[in-house]
Length: 238
Image (cartoon, rainbow, N blue to C red):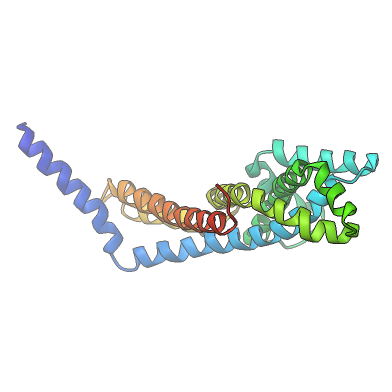
């Protein structure tokens, strides 16, 4: 077969693949699935930031028992795969405690627990990275411990947390693709449904569908990256 015919056939296959996205409401459905993904990520991130800050502060407490408990929790969340945690939350908790837990609720619970542990460790590291003489200087000029924490420690901690937390948020958004395994109808699941519906008529539909899903994730993470850079510049972070 001449190379020109091969090129034409390949072009036609790609055209048909992307044509699937214009059929009916396929693209709109993908956007709806993306919103489900982003919504789960946003709720999980918001809870993780608040709880993570508190957990990070708790990790710096000098009490040995508290440190051990925090360490155990952090290591479990860090080592355990998120998919396993999802299965435990969605299938295990519902049967063990006889409660009704939707896929979305189980996903938010798991990502919040994971995000809290990760954010807490970032907060702990940022707090411990502040030089001791900063505390001593604050005391020397007559500031209380509360004032030292509010006006000296927190501003320095926030500056170092911005790039690190944005990286964690991006990871959480990408990891939300796992919620498809607990029955959540999000962007990946809808993409699979579109591919399956056109499996016989357009075998190459997966090329276009997964490319568009990739671009959707890329666009969301790219916007976050732009926001992080603006915050870094605003706070004078190199």
